[in-house]
Image 1 (cartoon, helix red, strand yellow):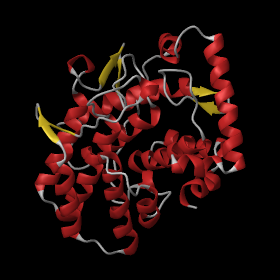
Image 2 (cartoon, rainbow, N blue to C red):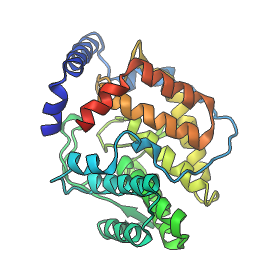
Image 3 (cartoon, one colour):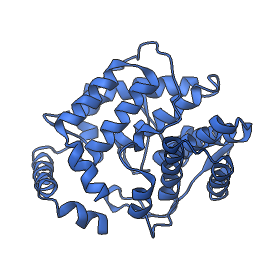
Length: 308
């Protein structure tokens, strides 16, 4: 709540928030269907071109904030999600300062692993946070959390080459393959798939949440490209198939569960995610998407909103 007040105190952010809320109400009024039901019939399957994956230890998705600011931003929050995020921010800080502390990274990894639950060959990070917007209550897990944990474990593996961290990353991503009908987060939508950030009753398809998963899958494939390669290829195809349908003029849908559009906060996150995807894949579409996010968003405002 404190962070929300901080953002709303910035006039440009507040004005944009009001604008997209009015747009959400208008689209809800003129459409009897959710975005998912409206868009699904228009989505075709787009195959991604062949590309070489390249792992970079700096986690570019989080390039917008340094570790000290992140600690202040997430202080007093003991949920598993910010703990995983802070581990990635700290890893980035080690890289920037050229002070890699292997024992510290291993300690963080062990702490995160101990908070997980092993089921069906997967490592699950459960939370009981209530998300009323997605009608989500009780214990559940999330693609975005699984992906960030996997990306952190991969950085531990990169720096010390102990197989246990590669295995923990794999286990975190295997949990993303559990079908929704079996209590998991993987949706099959016609010929596409989507790993959900929220286990909502109907597909919510939060865009930034799925991109984190695809980044983690791609990063994993740079070290071991047999176990999860098909999962990565199908996920990338599904992202490319759905992505054009998220745009509404100069706005982009946050999810398909209800009519809602990304605010400056999420436009900034998407910009850094697309940049990360471009470095990982060298696919030009992601470079152009990062540039597009920068144009329709406001990177300086995004950073000021988080860091001041």
